[in-house]
Length: 595
Image (cartoon, rainbow, N blue to C red; front, side):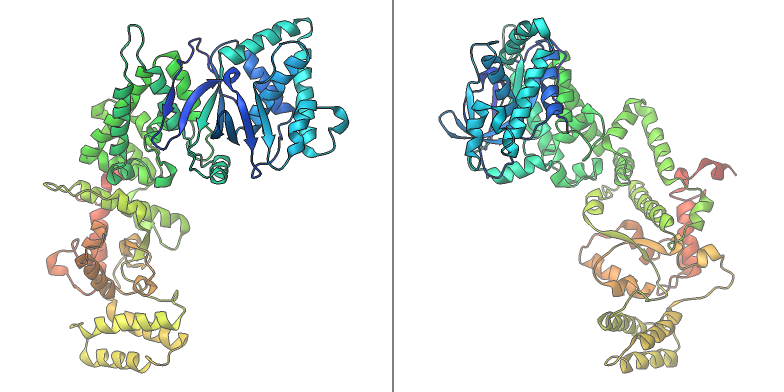
């Protein structure tokens, strides 16, 4: 893979300066010509492997920088002595630079060669060959081969300039001492080198874009003639923003990213300002490269003010109930924070809420008739049902007046929620005797307390359950399931199919998908008891799920507390989509609302 180095287009050079971290690490921008000492490559690393494409790319990029500030990607080291370093990451780049210095010296293009040396723990012959580079031994092992090929690529590149070769070499050499820098990261002594190398090379780099940007901001914010030193101010603001974004409720409403994806939370703001695709497909150090160019084209204050403004925007959205719930829902269903920032930038404050409502409508992509037709049995419908019920919960909480309660997007992110039938009419997914016995136990307890069932019928079913307690098979269990669910399932031959179906959205709610599959396949009364017990213990239960099992949506004179009846389902559906009181109606497709 070709290496892509970070270019700058500004003619303003970086100010010198280093950033020291509390863990003892040092981060600075070091001129290539200032690199000196002895570097040691440990056995956990492979040998030199750059090919013609990578070598030519490095040469051309340095040359085309034309003396403007140009940063190579990081060189990660650990100090082992005075001017002695373990080279943890950047072996390919540092070796190529070594070969460039060596070539210019050998060809008489410059008097001085490289000011550093490179040794290898498991390949001692490579250190000697790095000085010799003779063709005769170039194919004796793979390391020698790549070193020799790289040296010949350097020769060919300089030779393409013909009579101007000396001129090019002089300019090139000057760039290395005046404008071409590496991001130099001196890692803490107590950090395990192998672990650090592994993280660097699988994309879990502890040296983040945020740390690089912070170092650059601080180095560029030091005082000078006619300019105040703002390093303390920037550092204090940085820490304050980081603390705010570490508040779980603030963080979870602006992103559904796992916490370990953003160990430095301000990275989300920096990534957003940098633009581009987020996630694993984002090029390494994309954010740093992008924002560094902005800093150099404008000023560190300009970028930092954008970060501060974005932080203030987040806190403003968090404090506003409407923004918090609408934005939190959109993030929970896959909208990125950056998309919503762009949406806000393109609308006035008074129109932003309407824009969010339109975005929610587009995300649902449902009409009232679509809602009634949703079925749990269809895979594409399952996702729509889950999204619909999430919005039902979020909107119900948002509409609470004189309440400080908020929908917990933190709980939503951290808990495993699933679509569950409010009233299940089969237990076919239960396949083990232990599950069958638990299901029967729970339903026996509910039958015992059910006052509306004929006592003889109830006693007969309980007797069957007790008789099967010691010895039960699939057939006898399924027979008992049919008998029990028939007792708990009120019938209404006049109910419309969409409401009567056990798989319609009128029989679904969001519940925690715990290990107790017997509860998941239980009838309404058993689940109602379980929900009430969990509620008493302080468990988090989505508001609408709690209201379903408390018969909140059904008129008091029509309630049958132990059953989930057709009337209950119709009332539940009206609470969702009716023009008069439907919580979701404002977010359903406009054409249906007008018809």
